Figure (cartoon, helix red, strand yellow):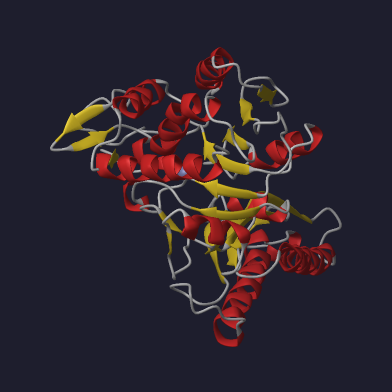
Length: 391
Ligand SMILES: [Zn+2]
C-alpha cells in the first residue's frame, strides 16, 4: 500500500488550511477536531491555557468495558512554525499535490500524523478495545513544548495514565528512543555608564560578560573532553554554546548593559540539568559581587527562557515492545531535536517518537510529505487497532 485513504488526505487538507502558527490561537483546529470526536460519541476534554487563547485536546476511546485507565496514547502538537519570509512555490495553507508529494505547512511536522490519527477515530470508536486509546493534541510545542506540561497535569486530573505513548514527530516511521534536553538561558549584566576616558567611574558590563562567556566555554569544553558520553548521538556528549551577545551603545561609553543568550543540550537527567543551571546562577552571583565592588547598583539577572526535557527510553521498554509487535523498527541513532516525548516519559509514560515524514522537511519553505509515509502510518494505526480488538 503506497496511498493513504482519502479520509487522511481530506483531514490533512483541513488541518493545513487552519494557520496554527504558535504565536496565534489554535482553537479553530481544536474545535474542529473536538467536534468530530464528539460527533462519534467519544469523551473529549478541551483544556485551555491561562489566557484561553489556546488549548490542549484529549480524546479518549474507552475500552470495551468503558474503562479509561492505562492504554495507548497517540500524541501530536497542533502548532506549526511561521512561514514569514520563506519562499513558497504554492500557498503554504493550501494542501497542494505536486510531483507525487503533498505540500503545505505542517504536512510533515506534524499535521500528517494528526490527520492519520483523526481519520482513525471512527474506526477506533467502532472497535471493542482491550485497552483504551488516547489522542492528545497540544499547543505551543514549537516554542518550547509549553503545552505538554499542562497536558500531563490534565491527564492526571482526569485520572488518565496511559501505559505507552507514541509521539508522531516525523521519523520516517522509525521508533526513536532518545534525544537530548534543550536548555535556553538569558543573562543580563547591568553595569554603570561613564565616559570611556574615565573607566573607573563606571562598571563595564561587557568586560564582566566576557568572564561569563569564558566560564560557559570552559563548561562546554569540559563536556566535550570529560563526558559523559552516549555514542548513539552524532555528538556523543552534552553540548553548549553562547549563541547571542549584545552590549554597548557608543564608542566612547563604558557599557552599562550586556546581554547573553546561551544554551546547553544535555544527555543528563533533569536533575543534572537543574544543577548545571544552578551552577550558572552561582557564577552569575560571583560576577555580580565583583561588579558591586565597583558600584553597589550593578547586578546580573538570569532567566531560563525555555526547556525541553530529554528522552532516554530503554531498549526493553513496553512501548518499544509494542511498536516492534506492530512492525515498527527501532532507529539505533538518537536525535538532536527536542520533542514532547521527554515530558511524557518523565510523567511515567513509556514513550517513543515515531511518525510519518522526514524531519529534514520540517520548518522549511515548501514543506511536504510523501503520501507513502502517510500510508505507512495509517497501516501502523490499523495494526494497532487490530492488536487491541477484543473480538
Ligand atoms: Zn514537531
